[in-house]
Image 1 (cartoon, helix red, strand yellow):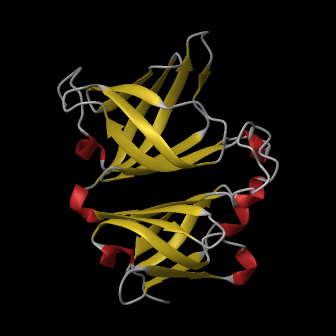
Image 2 (cartoon, one colour; image 1 turned 60 degrees about the horizontal axis):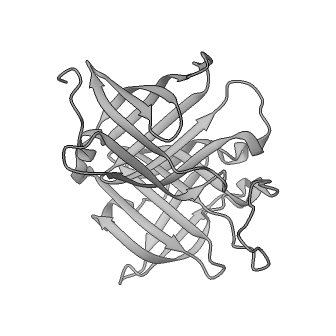
Image 3 (cartoon, one colour; image 1 turned 90 degrees about the vertical axis):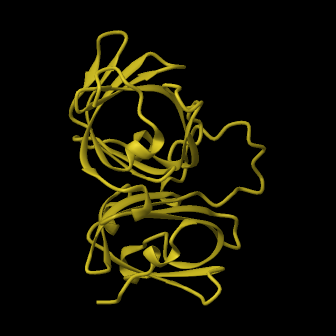
Length: 244
């Protein structure tokens, strides 16, 4: 990539891992395992610390990546599902530095250095936005041989929306990433340790208005169940699985 040039969203499709995070005060993080899956305009981002950390301090989110203009270096990660409900807006400037992708914070002073693990074609991805009867939202993304999903919390009818910072029920949210082999989907990593290595099966109804997801009942996968399809981007057949 040309040094200093600005990517387009479609240039970012694939799997990224973070090499480092640096703050303006000199602190840095090179141990947190961060994986960013991008497919078309949609993303799932999972960040797992190398040391035991309270669940309330994890970071994971999913949504849509928007570029401010066709030649603008400014990108916004619009989070539809967020492990941390009180997160500030996520805005960064992206540029190439050789094969590395550099992200500089716009609203907060930070720098992240990203390395591409896999590059995917934009047309190798599909995304479904889902919702159930309780109002819980889901972002489900596939890009080539990888998938990710984020299951949001059930809305609290008694909440006034003024403060969600305590994240009191972290078990009511799930962000996971996995791989696809021979049409079979299996979770590799998750904010919920008990779902790791869990196979999941997805089946649309004939009109693609409902998606049923099944997983082993003892794994407590929050994606299991019947979901109303709010929207689909890409080829819906990419979101079908084959049972083992």
